[in-house]
Image 1 (cartoon, rainbow, N blue to C red):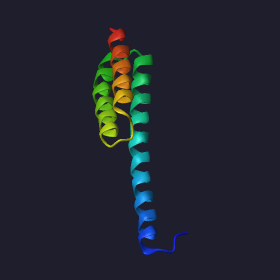
Image 2: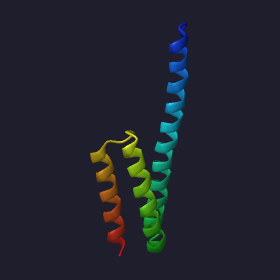
Image 3: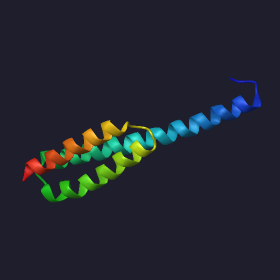
Length: 87
């Protein structure tokens, strides 16, 4: 545990940022899982709605620096191609 006042504050700030980052990452992972389930169930209507949510969540994570831009683009591309392959 730090002794210096600024270090104590830094520990609190880091914990808060870490919690927020975990929340965004979990949101991305859960939305991807839901989309994968819709694709597996051949539910095209639901999958098309979920793709938009997934893209939004991935873009938010990328803008916050939790995911690199290239990784976000690759994930979105692969998911969109899976949905297009259903038709």
